[in-house]
Each structure stands twice: as structure tokens, then as C-alpha cells.
Amino acid sequence: MTHETAGDDRWLVIVNPNAGKQKGEKDWPVISTLLTEAGFEYKHLFTSSRGHAMSLAEEHIREGFQKIIVVGGDGTLNEVVNGIFRQDRFDSTDITLGMIMVGTGNDWGRMYNLKHKYQKAVKILKKQRLFIQDAGVVKYYDGTNEMERYFVNIAGLGYDALIAQMTNKMKDKGKGGTMAYLINLLKGLFRYNHAYLEVTIDGSTVYKGKVFSMSVGICKYNGGGMMQLPFAIPDDGLLDVTIFKNVTKIRVVRNLNKLYSGTFTTLPFVQTHTGQVVSITSSTREQSNLETDGESLGHSPFIFSILPKSVKIITGKNWNI
Image (cartoon, rainbow, N blue to C red):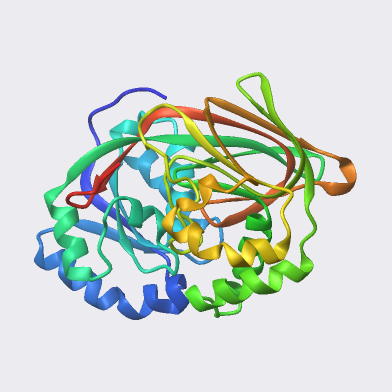
């Protein structure tokens, strides 16, 4: 990427009309009025399909936009972040990224104390408290094709990826929400079989065996408030890793509350690590699937790496790392 300073001073507002069971579409008139009243000059665009936010962001940054507001959920944000990294006009940190949450999980926003009430969300955007966080990038496979995806929150493997896949199918049918996620958590227990994985961090094998679920990421929360990476610091230049090893499904249910409090790390079937490069392989019969920031992707093998301090964001007040 090349560094430029001359760009469009307006905000680009990318709206996912289907986010939060069509809240994006239903609430846009209110959100747009609040933005206008707060003095924002902006161009707004609606997404029409999965992946559309990525191409909209990439195209309009190349045209000169350097300030983007996402009106959607974590998946829409993920697409916009990928658009930022795929354009070649500006450095990624020349782009300012804000969010108005209308999704169902909103886990990235939870990390930064963003607000669900639109009036408060717009005030946060107006104050522009800036922070530059790390980003992750993962190489994975879709069939025989190697693919690449950037993310700013958490990537999940194994059981976590299955639940994301089930939940995304419900969202595509106009369903979803936190309750749907919890229902899928229980339904998925009956469908899921442990994957056999070998996990290498910065060149050293840290685990080899059956894995129930696994998280790799930058921030703390996913799954609608589960603190799956409780020690994550979003600008320390490290990926945080949580491995849930071979554990019975009954034991998972019994300890579900500890996922929300982040106290599960003391359990004997849990490992936590940090590192800059995380490689994960699995047997051909038991390929593990992947989700990043709630978006279902492909399958193993995976290579995760870190892009330190590469995404400039607007945060809420008094958020703690």
C-alpha cells in the first residue's frame, strides 16, 4: 500500500439491511437522521449479499474515502476490514473505522464499550476516540484452493465453527438472535465430533490430540458475550489462543457459565497460549472448519499470523484492556 493524504472528507456509511433480523433496514431512517443532526457528511450504501460490504469498502476507498461507518454486525465489520486490507490506495491505518451496532452478537463492540442505543452510538462516533488495534490474518482452504481472510476479533475452530455455520444458515432465512445461538449451542452438541488437531505456535508444538473447540484472536468476546480469550490485549502484537481439549459434552454444558465470566481457564481440559504465528493441521478424515468474526469459511490446514497495530478504530469511553 502507498501512503496518501488527499481523500474524500465525507464518511462512507455501509449498511447491512439484514443485520439483526432486518434491524439495519428498519432502523436506518432513525440512524440516518441522527447522523445528519450530528453534522456528519456522508454517502450511504446498502449491501445486497454476503461479501458485498467487502467490495463496497475496497472500491470506495480506492475512490478516496478514508472514513467508514459500519451499520451492521460483526460479520459486516469483518467484510469491511477485508476491503480495507485489499485496497492499495491508502495504508490501512489511514482509514478510520467506526460502528453502529445492529447485529445479534456485537462481540467486537462489546470489547470497546460501544453502545446499542443509536443516539449514544452516534455521540461516540462524533467524539472520535481513536485506537489502533492489531488484526489477524488466516490462510485456509476451500476445497483445494488456498484462501486468505483478515479478522479483528476472534476466529473459531471445531465446535465453535459448527455453531457459527448453523447460526448463519438461520440468519440467511431471516432468523437468528442470541436465543437462536443458544439453541444451536445445545443442538450442535449432538452433531459434533471432536477433531484431531496438531497446534504449533511460533514453531513449537503446544498440543496434539482431540480438540472440542478452539479460538484464536485479538479481542476477548464471541458467541454473544462469551469471554473465550479473557487475557487478550488488542494491541500487544500477539494472537491469543484457547484450546478446549478432549472433554465430554456433559462437562461442557456444566461449565457454560464459566465461558461468560472467563473463569474457564483454570479447568483441566483448557490450554491458553499467545504467539505471533499459529499453525493448525488435522487428519484428512477430520478436517476442522473455520469461522472468523462469525463468518463461516473453509477448512484446515490453517496458518494464523498477526498484523500489529494495523486497524484504526473509534472506541467507546472507559473501555478496559
